[in-house]
Length: 439
Image (cartoon, rainbow, N blue to C red; front, side, top):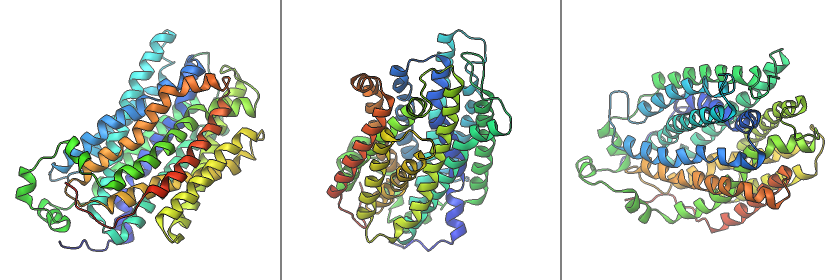
């Protein structure tokens, strides 16, 4: 099998730059969805149900995008057409979703409009996001793959930083952070508008700068017989049956990690409003101020993630880096239950950022090193199930768990910390492999 050549820094950068814009869209969604639906009138015990949609659409869309793009060859490439179409749809929906309360609809109708818009936003973001991971797997050799995913992690966190801060910045420059009952504030609406503009510009940059390998060259670099590949079609069940063991062991780690972050996205707004501002009233100015501060905390998390991502390559092994990162994140989550000062919370979210950095880079590095290129897209799409399923499970049981802890959203963040500690223990089951042949 012919070895893929080393790529320059800028070639690797261009592969992932569009991810910066996609992540702005994703961070705006993750930081503001609970705030939007709470503002529309959703009960806190039902908030987790709205969070079923993002992972549900991911588990449906990403394997399909991965499998179809494995067999797509156009003059624009195999992965790029999917990320471009996904980005276009995301831009349209980002302009609609935050206006759910501004259309003079009844509360129930506004909720339905918001849910439908959220479903399309999740579908399009997933469609745009997955090809970036596949491009690295397709075009970067094993020696540079860890570095390439680190670049992707950096751009991901930089995009998160920008998206999380938008409502805070817009409020600071004078855009209203208050609105009539049931209406989303302009600070949030304008954040989605600007995020949509940045998203399409970043994706266009990658579209015009990246030239994917033609089929014959891809086959040479991935040890594939072109004719046999066309004849052989593996269904998802066959692929899962023949998946390397690392697919499942890393998947177990992923289960605890993503359940933890699902509860962070769902309950941080309510937890911070309750623990720091002393309110649970979603109509109050304090609640909306807490909502802006959540964006700041998530931005601090992104900064912590960027800084920690620089240290991860210094560890002797991926496993050790994984374990330490998740333990630090677990400590960060648990500490939020005991902190009542908005600024001291920076320490907790810096630690949470360490776990996020590891979650973005290490699972895909470990997995793609154990795969050949033949079904790379399909496997990465299926592997997304280890991100989506735990979020779906966490969302389904979230309301029940919230009742068990007396309605305390702060306690849900402490529970997220326990999940990350369980994830760190699960890393001991992972055995790294340098290469494998997938079916």
